[in-house]
Image 1: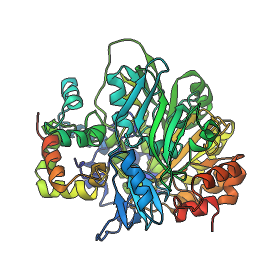
Image 2: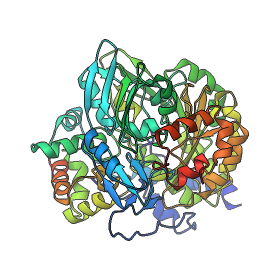
Image 3: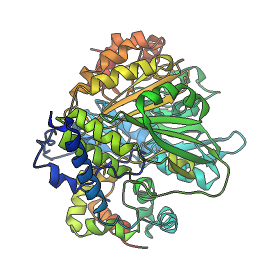
Length: 468
Length: 122
């Protein structure tokens, strides 16, 4: 269950081999490495929690793992103080840390029911997306879209506005048609088209501030296959073509490879044939190669770019055809910290140019940037609220400096009308967020209705919501 | 600067290309049958199978960065490190592996059993 102890990642990039590990011995002696400090060691005593990237730590009074809604309800009644839900601990934002009780709902996993007439499924909220998609596939069903990571629980992904890519496809929360919330005082509140429907726009994306989700009901579609094409292309050329590619393909996104001038473009479309093909991936090695080029040539950005261009320009496009859930999501065998902003799509390429220029002032950067497209929706705290968006994610390897992700890029994203991903690094306060979300005050009214004592709020959320 | 001299660039590129050509054989890759088996295999003990299905299966049953369940070549280097090291990596998290493999209610014995299940051909 561990991974190879090397720096790798699955990032949907083309098959490599523009750099090889053995070249390190040649160059390492010539060039001083440009890399960053190792992460700190952590002591451990009593209940401890950390997020996936290792950035966030907490010492809660308890980590509870209720097996069902009744146990969750009992837990809410008997516990005191702060309560925060955890999904898969993938967020870089401090949504979970608390000295109170952390509740892991992953024992509440699996399908509850399938309604083929309505094309909806009800699932326990702790079900991981990767588990759900396999259960659905066995029933001939699928989710309309998926984030590019599927280890999240349904509750975590929905509550943070997690999304995939597809200019005509909204985030996962937009396919939610019902939910059951266990409130901090132990009530169970059902929301759907017939009950409390007026609260659904508030509850779709609520950062776990209303209570704990026990069940969700989602729209589904018949299971489908996708055909994925990946090709390398100069970034300036791709930015010109990006709007038309996003309009033409069901899924379109790309990774920019810093200090190379190249991007890996990815399109995915419905494939109705039966000749599936799934070549082995070497994406992990691509990231390792990018890191090596940083380590060896970080002090020589012109040389780094020149060499990358020579070596990348000869690559052939790739083709893969697979079940949708196997292509849309990948895992991340290498940890990172991240900021991601959702910019109005019309302003996104201008924003991206400025982000790249700023990013490449830092020679230590090597991690690819991820750019995706998302349709707008009507959830009050959705980062895509009434706004078709392009998400721009800037990432830094775990253990390396990451403060610049916030300090350098927040002004750029804000100047382009961006909204931050709730689960990723940002420092916006309530005043700044309220100006970006027209229904902010309405959401706060609903939040106070569910949780008048603020038990679902930790330090981070009190700042986000402006509660002293 | 030194690297702006064309001959130095060409030499560097030649070294890279030469070393690329000398690279060893790739690790064995799973076949479609290996992937299909990984997708369907479950521990025989019911409670463990439930935990496996809601955690390990997400990353270890497809051609991804994580080693494929029941495909020993992907695990050989890891198994050589010994079960204690593997358990430590699972318990504390390691590289992309999240702490406890996302199984918040797994005991260490259950994690050992899951390691054995994942690393051996079923």
